[in-house]
Amino acid sequence: MPNLQFYLGQRASSPDGIYIEDFHNNWYVDYSKLERVHSYIQWLFPLQERGMNNQAKELTKKEIEAFLEDETAKKRLVKSYKLMLDFYGIQLSNDTTGEVQRANNWRDRFDIDRNTHNNLRITRILKCLGTLGFPHYQAPLVHFFLEETLVKGNLYNVKESVLNYFIFAVRDKQQRRELVEYAYKHYEPKHEFVWCPKKIQNIF
Image (cartoon, rainbow, N blue to C red; front, side, top):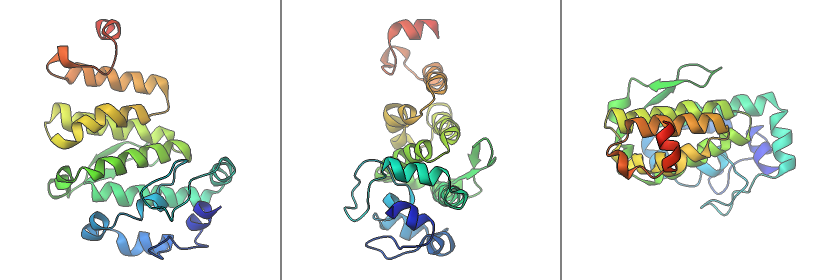
């Protein structure tokens, strides 16, 4: 179970050779490294599908079950989430509900908008949260991005990914519907909204 072993500090990531506590202690706020290096995200947020790092391993069902039973692994996953949120200029304001808000550094960090590979990272993070015990963290983060892109006019290059991928990574069907409704109500022009059928739009 390489992903669980990594989160329990029993093995390093590959090919970087970094242990989980090294990430949390030494990579936090090292924005240039977090932006430049592309092989760590598959270790911090493993999925049941292959990523760009062919030395990272996909999650197995058995590994997911073991991860969900391990409080140390889950606490460290939240720490990884906070590390990446800070990288994006966001902070977790409620560890229980998953509510997020702009961090103090948001003006500087919103330049992630220039690098669209960060959209892929966020999609991976959302999927991983849903798989490894934090599905309730998904909708608050997606709502944050919908508000920033559709209401406040920020993160222009993130908008399409929010609508095409982030929303549909949310596991809870009712929360997904509420996010689509929120998106529809704030999207202009309305006739170009294609993320739900017209009959649902009429209900909204």
